[in-house]
Image 1 (cartoon, rainbow, N blue to C red):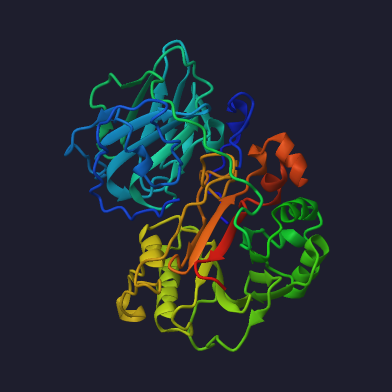
Image 2 (image 1 turned 45 degrees about the vertical axis):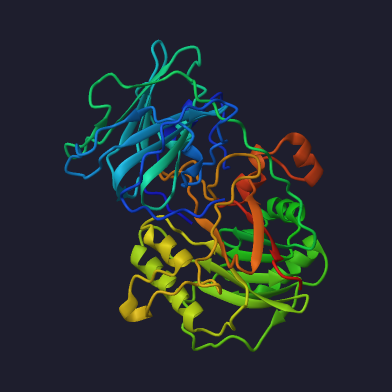
Length: 482
């Protein structure tokens, strides 16, 4: 769970059309500081992809940059703004910006975005300070609907914000600036970048909440702060969510103070059948399927924030890890935990060909190298944890698709309107795609149509009130018959 550093209380005054930002698949490639600008190709609404805001950028390739800032004019910060692309959906302005340097956008930059419209409002957002301004009033991310991806460091970012305060009858004028240390700006003069609302993108197709793959194993991963599933004040919210999603395996983070048996009882009451739950630290793995014992080596040295168990899926083993890596600014701790996991997969008790998946709150809010370690086995501290190791059984990296919300283009899994940090992708699915297929979604009940809420017995505020994290839902199938 991410902790607030600054609280900006005026966000509610500036909600778009009276609404605040709702708590709403492609493996992110680690930035190398040399991201090429997309080809300058004209696009139309029918040709445009829907643009999933996930920190991956291949879907931007058909969209011509609105501005290419000259290279080599970075200031002391090293941020050298490059290509800037702009598009819009029915409710959001969407941008992609190259920075020429790997940075943590929400912590390590003085970068700001200003948007003006003649006869209309002026908006500015300072990403490093995590502070916005709307016609002179101070707001946080929620007042403007700001979402940035990726959440970890990168040299390129996607930015989304609500545009309903602007009229589409007049163009927008946009500019980026890095004023902190004699920094770059784009454009270099005061003219700004004109956006004439000429790059619309289509809405995303909704994803079904029910299983679509016959015989799939449904896994639900959920950070439920302070035993929220067992909290009398939130239990009704969680019950509706769990009943609607109907999982076969449940992975819980922040199960702080209650034993595993209480989770067994709660799941049996809500979902029926027999459940078995096991606990380590604040992590719970609960399953309708039987656990397989005798495979685990207690001396393997896996960090306590990573908890694996083996399940019997129709006579075949499946190892499920749940994780709650160190939070916030603890980059070194998270890197050590990631390095240790790869060592475990290289030297530990798993027999070759055993499929596995890793789900949980990985708190990847800092250095991008932690993602590279977890996906591609690139160990940072080889002196302590040994050599790199491609962790899938076919000597490739693991799959780590950015699951999107079932009814929006967003992929964030954590949201707190009162926190200074904007929405982030903290919860991950990582798996052996040589042996498994997995598809899924993030559930944000605030974006579901009323008819679907009624069909699944949900209420619009359920996920927003239950937790600051959103549930990650994954349907898993074996690539070979089981």
